[in-house]
Image (tube, rainbow, N blue to C red; front, side):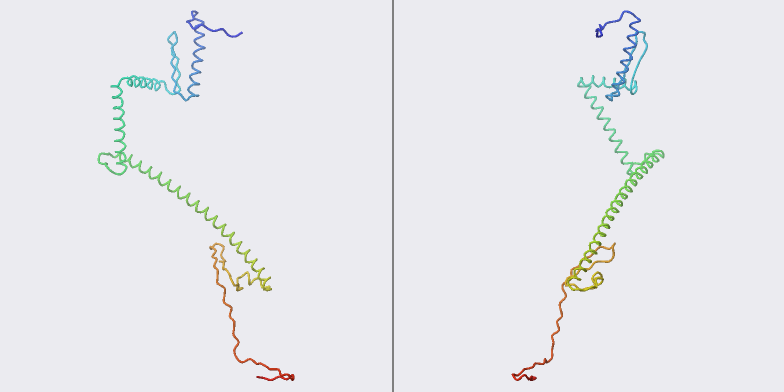
Length: 247
């Protein structure tokens, strides 16, 4: 059997009324707490019993909740009145104007202007603000420089590794050239080929230092020097009789 529906009316029996009040009060306080936590709401709950006893709950401060309620209620009432609404916005504009003037004055004082009306205490506070600002700026500058140094170090390591790989490739090309030269010219002096002492028609030079950048340079083929033989050459005429005669 389901629970019967309870008629909402005053309970005549004082004992039953007190028991019901205690149960419903605890349930209402629990629901208010759950609403404040789940929905991030500012909740204020005030309960007076029939005997005049106070029960309350607030997730922030009951005083701040009541002040906020009164302020919001007054604003809502003023918004319905055009004259009150105009005065409200004029008051808000005046507050914002005063805040702007204060900020501009503080900015000029930070720049070292309009200091004549300040006392020792105000000047000390201003000096502390400037020192804290300079400290924050220096820390930010040092962090940026450290990040740039780390980035340059990383790029330098990458370039150094690439230079090592290029140097290995150049050595491999030298060994291949030595083998090709040996097959082409039949020489067994592979060290001369590796050391670059063999004159190729086309050649390139490589720096020996691993850390130094590699410079490749293509040379033009060297001209072949042919010596023309000069002087008289002996020619012989062979006669038909098998003899020879010098010319």
